[in-house]
Length: 605
Image (cartoon, rainbow, N blue to C red; front, side, top):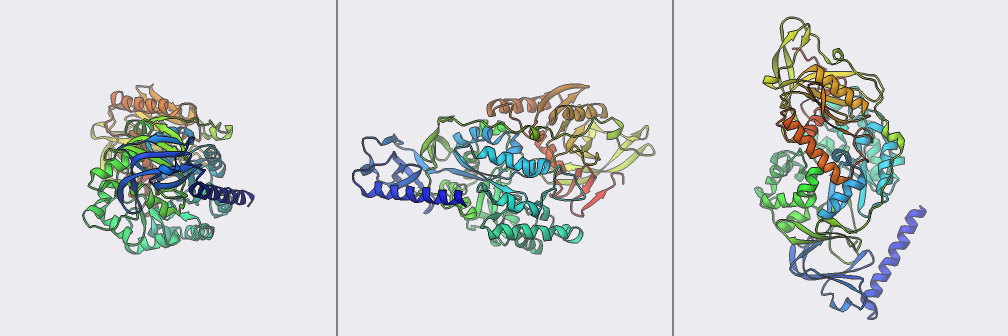
């Protein structure tokens, strides 16, 4: 309560200072961006104007000549465009494998000034203490980083094993933190009908968490892949009557969700790209875009450095035929309205001076970035110091099992060949298909068929809870030789591995265990490339963002050159093959999962 009172007093003093500066002819602005074009996301206009700033807040927008005094810092932005700082409304630091600090260092120069992160991944591994460590890091940063926390881990109890369980009992502790915006994606109620039929008590716990969050004025984010009609309505009500969805993949889904009042988070990340399909509801049907919001969800550092962050997503949206100002609305005023942010998202008096100066509107070329009136970046480079954060040692000891053997990873079978179920990878989606293949049996073991791209896929429980190993087959990973293993496997993050032969497969898994988490590629029994990820087996604090980008780019190159992998961002695609909250077949440490029926399937038909 004292912290809240202090914030209120600080805000009141700031407001009084702004009024005095505007009305007292002896007072002047601290900063004026002069001679530019104002991008007004309130009225969807562009017109000439200045932006004057005092302290951390915008003083006024318009002709600010009378507010320039002897000590005012004037930045000439002639011919350039001034707009609000960009908001990424749904993202995961863990997917970038970077700490909050290192991600921010790459993101800020691209114009993204606010991040709303979902620490679902580290929550599955380390529980509330892991989430707390991430929040503590965010307190040190100059950009605004807020969190939407999980209200349930694991998402599907009884079909996957998490490192820690989170439920309604943990919500008060988490939601009372001022950096917690609300509850994150309610994945446990994504498969609405199977949950209702087979895991109904989860709905009661979900509603308890949601109603408590809503009573505090906190938001709740949805997760509604391929939901329509009654099931979509049930999901929306489960989230407290207004939710978002970042899993919308078709124009038809987009239309129905917008008509229901869902904030559609149009995802455009490194491996899942849905904006072009979603945006058709606006370009072809002419529906209102106020609840259309652009998000990244999952991005690798290589893409952040090469292409940018939200500015690149806005650029792609403009290329789909959306007016530039309307596209900018999707990363400013639209998310601000969804979350109830009253001090960012627009250029107006009293708002926080998180500003972006663009030299090219269509290409979204970021020239300068301001955080609370302080220049944070110019010409793609940070201009302020960002403090470092040391993660506690307990988050770096999350792999709690011993090595595995070849026989542990094999599926036994009789005869000379068998018809088996096969998970089908869908490129650039976390959805999967379901198919069949005929595999030969040698020595009582089902064998891979690399020539047909049918490969063994395993998930090895690493949290020290039960030691289970799930086994299946997958088509679409496009490996010609070797194996890949990683401790990034949504959402419970056990060790997932795929390979063309069992010898390389077991070596890859054991290398990840030995590293205490990370990514490893094995070819002919030797390490072709690896990357330790010791923070929860998900992130690293041993490399900065630049070095991490180079490392990931190197791993992608090695995957192609050493393993012959033709799939775009193969590590991210592999990590989503265990996401049991999205259709259709996935794998966990329990085995092959039919996510639409909530059951474990036998691999052999």
